[in-house]
Image 1 (spheres, one colour):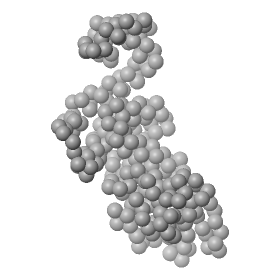
Image 2 (cartoon, one colour; image 1 turned 30 degrees about the vertical axis):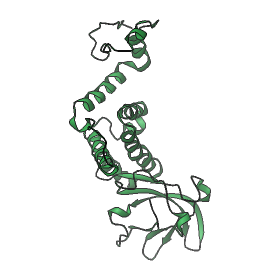
Image 3 (cartoon, helix red, strand yellow; image 1 turned 180 degrees about the vertical axis):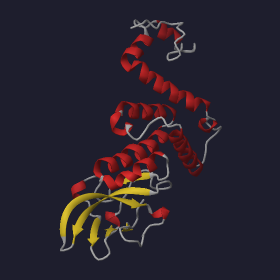
Image 4 (cartoon, rainbow, N blue to C red; image 1 turned 60 degrees about the vertical axis):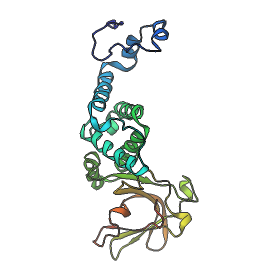
Length: 250
């Protein structure tokens, strides 16, 4: 490994600016640049540097003076999340093919703002991975839409009375063969989906977990369903659409 000592012109690892920690850093018994290169490798360091450089030079990511209202902060956070996708740091195939890059991007976003990292994580990994891992081939049409922000997703498992105890979930999905629809229903408030990240203001679609029932009343256990979020105009009337009555779906 080529040494990368202090004063190196290597663009991946520029010298840190002098400040209150400079004296402590100077007493280190090892060269930190060589450790970083060994630990992460040049490709990952370059990937992270590209992310930090993009955020640093984009006015949208400049921290506003003073504090914003909750509504303004949510709006700004969503616009920033959209901009992250526009930079195309990740591709659809990176979801499973390059998990280190996915985690690195989330960590970089978290160093800037963990609210942004969480929104990105819930949309890409929690919502997107649920579709990729649990869906059939016909559901894969959603994956490009996730990455170009044509749709924005959330993961609806938890219910008011059941936390994440999947066996106890009470939301149901009844298949109606006459209309070829699956009707999702939360029978009461305690069965309402709750604590659904991204749902409140931004989600257009949700992966909803419900107990699947077929004609005759047979329960086939918990299954995930892609459902258009209430804020985007639910209760489709066409064949093969998913109907929903989710009650207090928050």
